Length: 91
Figure (cartoon, rainbow, N blue to C red):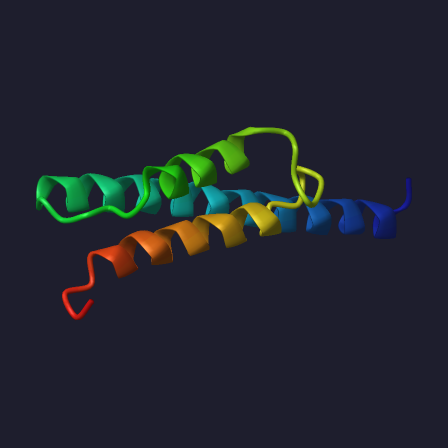
């Protein structure tokens, strides 16, 4: 392979690694948010939101193929927002 091909392969690999890292960070934040809300005695929202988001990340059936974690990141963000919204004191 020539140099341009290697540069392209390395760029794609770097993007995929970054997206995977974001998905892992969001999963950790989701788990911590649920744990902190439960420790404080606040509602964590429906249980299926948490477990559904974690299952969607882990299971191979996705809207987009697994090397592209953008749909997984979206589901994790929605679950995190839902859990934080259920603990909102204004509601």
